[in-house]
Length: 140
Image (cartoon, rainbow, N blue to C red):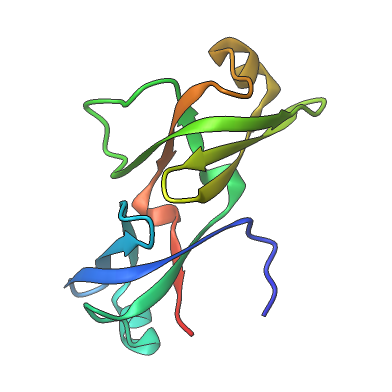
């Protein structure tokens, strides 16, 4: 299946914590970095997600926020440091590509105004911020 979602990261499930309606799934990416996804308990069961299993973490570019440094005191679980590799500005929205260690590239769609205010350009250090609730999971 082909998807329009640019960010598709593979990894191994290291923990699943399931409640009555929702579950958190901790994933070790192939790069060694960890992500946390919050999905329905039903999805965990339907997809057969279990510790040791493999999953793909999917996130839309519009759900990847960028900061110029790690952010403390924030509920966003996923903070991945990286380096901007390119900025493609549009009239209102810019597409920013970020290299994360381990050969991972993330795409972020943010306002052109944010790019300008943060001074983002190729070579800029950034931290990609992704809420656990904005990560979808798939299995093969």
